[in-house]
Each structure stands twice: as C-alpha cells, then as structure tokens.
Length: 356
Ligand code: SF4
Image (tube, rainbow, N blue to C red; front, side):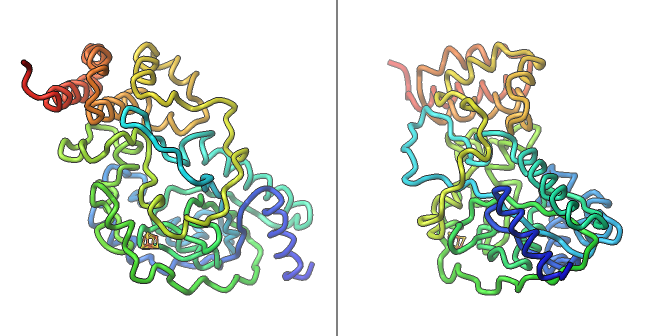
C-alpha cells in the first residue's frame, strides 16, 4: 500500500477510536535528550526512580531499544479538557486533578492503542508494533512536538492551539517507515508567564524547568513518604494531582472539551467533601481499598497516601468540624497518616487562635 494512503488510514483509525490527534514522528533520539539527562542529574525527578533506571533512559533515548527495528512513532493524544466555567470549590472540598477523576488513563490509553494496533494489523500484517504510555516528563512531549501535535509550553506540557493543554500522550511504536509530519515549530507562549506565577509551590523554576519535587502532582501521587512540612500549607485542598498551571493558561480558555465518556467510571471516584472521604477511607482495609478503587488513579498513592493528602487538605481548610475525624486518623495503623493528622490538628488549632 502507498505509504501516504497508509498514513491517512492509520490517522483516521486513531481518530475513529477517539484520539484527539494522531501524528507521525521518526524513531530518532528526541531533540531535548540532553536536557532530559541534565534534569535527571539534577535529581529534580525526586523519588520517581523508574525515570532514571538505566534501561528506561536507554528506551527514552532510542525507541528501537523498546521495539527492535522501530522506524516510526505514531503519536496520539487524548483530551480531558473540562467544560468551562469550572465549578467554584469550597475550602472543605477535595480537589482532584482532571486526569485522575475517572478510569486510570494508562489503562484507557493502552486499550485504545491496542485497538489501533489491531486495526493497523488488518491492512499491514507485516508490521510489528508496541504501545507505550509513559510517565516521561520531557521526551514523550518532544516526540509529540516533532509529530506536529503542539508546542511545549512554559509549564512543560504539550499545548495545541485548538485543544489546549489538557492532553494525555501515548505512542505506538511501529517497524514500518512512514513519512513524519512537519514538526510544530511556533512557540505561542510569548511573554506570558501565568503558569510560572500561579504555581503555589514554585515548582516551575523557569520556562520549561519543572522541579518535580515541589510539584503538587508529584507530592500527592508519586511521593511515598511524608510531604515536606514547608510545602504542606501550599498544597491547599488539592488532594490528588493538580491542574493549576493549566487552569491559568490562556490556551485552555477556548479549548474544545474532551469527551467525558472516554474516562467514564460509572460513579464518582470520590465524595466532594474531604471529611466524608476521610471517614470512608479510615474504615477500609487494604483489600477493601483495592476493591473500591481498582482501575482508577487512586491506586497509585494507595490508602495511606490518600489519607496523608486528605489530612493535609483538612488541616489547610482550618475547619474545626474536621477535628473528630483527624483525632481518629491519629489512631490509624499507618505512621504516615498519624504524623500528617497530628500536623493538621495543630494547624486547625493555630487557625482557631488562643482558646478563651
Ligand atoms: Fe505558556 Fe502562559 Fe500557558 Fe504558561 S500559562 S504554558 S506561559 S501560555
């Protein structure tokens, strides 16, 4: 089959499966490989050791390490852009990042990439393929920019002029050589620095320079241990991930909303109230927790990590009604939860001022 026809059949198959964009990039070392290595050397990836593992680094630098004979990366993105305006959230409510509200996006993405591979196989049986949904902070975006899907914003996320930045990225490695799309060259951030100014923890140290150790998404999802005390007040009521650098981005103001069915779970992932959520979690054992949250992003921080985050959120809310549930958290089997509950109680006490 003519390769141009093949490209368009693949692109159309991807769009039919619900991807917001599909583009083609050569299976080459990404443009910002050196920047990525320096980022790892600086230790800014924090506890995400999987990023610095030798085999993982090799795969990120050379796609053929992940799929021998790989010639092309079929880059795809899924949108989770919310409908605007966003609902106003009370200080006692839990804020969950958009990508964590429904089914685990890795699973959704992998299913769609596997379905795409199956369709490609039907008209290109000789192709070997491998789907890949990465946690990579730089390189996946690099390949996506190379495939013409958008530019990398100062908040380090891929942004498309019509779709904004609420985009999840993944790729299908394939052994067939296909012409790459023209790269996305313009940088539409211009003199804007809203994301840098808005980040409460100062995690965006400069344009496209993310110190993951300060990023609320890292602190509430990836970090296994205690949240550094000096950062806890800055986390507010963001109990799972963070979208602040996207909420302020002007390119999201007119972004086409994503299809809510894509990550639909069939039930809300959590109650709105931090208090109710904490009460629910406290009575679950680990098996019950897995049963309740299987297939969602909440499996990542696990029960103790979630309760840790909720204690921080409740402490920051200053709500005296949270004292009884925090007093129960102090008895929890997890040392991590006990320590954060004690911190939260102190914070609520301090907010109430000296007792009469
Ligand atoms: Fe770029 Fe401004 Fe969006 Fe940051 S907020 S990514 S600087 S356009």
